[in-house]
Image (cartoon, rainbow, N blue to C red; front, side):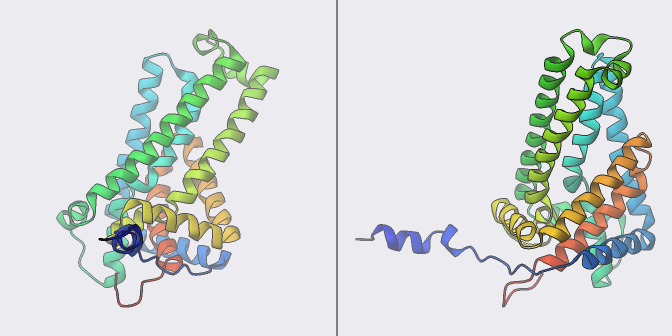
Length: 271
């Protein structure tokens, strides 16, 4: 008779091989950003394409919020929209990987790269990040109504009310604190999980846990990386998403290089 212990030994979960996590410094993150900029310059047509599509999505969502008279959700959605950026950058990981390997770049190859990866696991990761975005939007709506009242969202002087009243200041303060906490959680499990899923035959849980391990082992460097992403995305929001056309692809390429610097290969395997 097979006992419980022997069943556990042969279970897929027990066979999970965790890749080694490398230690990195702030200088390594700067090197990854420089490499991301270099990749963007080497193949700007792909970066500008994905950046424009991502910015277009932001413009479309803001237009819908305005159309349905929900302007109070514009700011939290603009900031939360960044949560799904790692998934949107999947095509850029392929560009960086091909440049790294010296392989030719073609539109069919880049656009079809998703079909050659673990699309199911990438899909699960997309579900997780979109769910995080939905939670953030629900929290933002709750906080707005709690501080500004149910009629605040329809007022013509919405921005003035938020920026010049104590209730508005509290809404901004509490909302930004909660948003930063949620963003930190999402960043920890998504920092390298998307490029890892794109590059390796692993499940999304393994990729998420690996990402958390990377952040835990390199808190200073990864905090610097998260702060850099936040600053560049803030510039993009201030430019009404126009900056995303360039900033998003550079960050996407840089994310690939951060992954390559932090996650090693298991002995006997290659990526």
